[in-house]
Amino acid sequence: MLQSLKNTWFFNLRGDVLAGLVVALALIPEAIAFSIIAGVDPKVGLYASFCIAVVIAFVGGRPGMISAATGAMALLMVTLVKDHGLQYLLAASLLCGLLQIGAGYLKLGSLMRFVSRSVVTGFVNALAILIFMAQLPELTNVTWHVYAMTAAGLGIIYLFPYVPVIGKVIPSPLVCILTLTAVAIALGLDIRTVGDMGELPDTLPIFLWPDVPLTFETLQIIFPYSAAMAVVGLLESMMTATIVDDLTDTSSDKNRECKGQGVANIASSLLGGMAGCAMIGQSVINVKSGGRGRLSTLIAGSVLLIMVVFLSDWVSQIPMAALVAVMIMVSIGTFSWDSIRNLKHYPLSTNIVMLVTVAVVVFTHNLAFGVLAGVLLAAMFFANKIGHFLFISSEIDANGTQRTYNIVGQVFFSSADKFINAFDFREALDKVCIDLSRAHFWDITAVAALDKVVLKLRREGTEVEVIGLNQASATIVDRFGVHDKPDAVDNLMGH
Image (cartoon, rainbow, N blue to C red; front, side, top):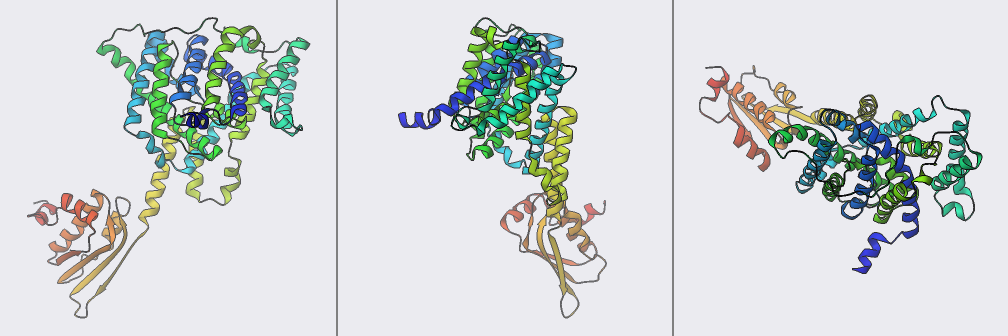
């Protein structure tokens, strides 16, 4: 028991504590910004980030991954908050959590295996671009001090690791934040700070049941929003888990993560927070700052609450330029630069899937739309490619009265037309033998193609024999095929 606890929570004590501190500082402005996007008080986003991070540390399936209030989820809440108010948002967040728990028990997290590497790369690149774009308002129409502070912050982040001894011990983003805050206070610089983003809460969150009527009408209002948030939240969380898996060279339990996200969102809604999900930017900060275990996520959430409630006077003085520098570092580190170098070497279809995923996400600011477009494109390219792996040959007997067609490959919706076009229906033969011993029939389109071939040949007076069907193909042909049914030829001809 103690050994298991140590392996899960305390195997990387120093790295997790320091990384959690960095993430907690970086979470504050983002939680406030996302609250503003959703049209709610900054307290809602801050309480949500604290609660989700703490709960997911215990129930999540990916140690070291940071979950909190996110922009992708906030965008889905705008209309609901505008039309119905905060209480309906809390109810929708509660239902969102229940749907995500259901998805976990249905093992929908396993669907990640259908997301190709090119889609994940496009998702990562698009998110890096969005993270960078989100910093531009802080660098527009500002004084030279802001640019100087941001440049100094980037210098600290990238150069501090080369300092002997302490450079490898203390995360450079934390040094950046502390140093620039001290400089800004000492010099009395008039630049934008965290306190300018919105009022920080001064009390701990309390239990709060959504004040909405428990009626079918309420369900009709919140269900579309809850379903959308559940899908987007799980999609972003599963993609982020995959990325953290790669960064840490470890595996995670995707179905447990689905359930964990649901439990965290339920807890958040009951404490006055909005729904959230995994954050790739903060997760990358955590990993790059040395965070690996569940303790880093717990520290991030706990320290966030302590800072905004009890140390708000100090936290409010952190210059936004310091946090902008950290987020620019995240966007640079998140972007897959190898994907640019490999454009010349990778197949055209792979490059198209990656670029379309990036374009759709950046254009719509909706990660779900981009991933869906990428997955559909990847599926189409795959089906087209596999459809070409169908080889059909034939030979005729010495008497010229019987022809045998040998089918090799996969027959499904993409290759069904090629299968049909390989037969000569005008050739005068007594018998045709279709050898399927090296073929596989996958769907009803393939079965319909076989029906069409057999019935057309029989209509011309040719005897047809189908041989060699494997068990799986025979099962689907027997169930859905009609070529052996009475009156099949008449039905084909429209009689």
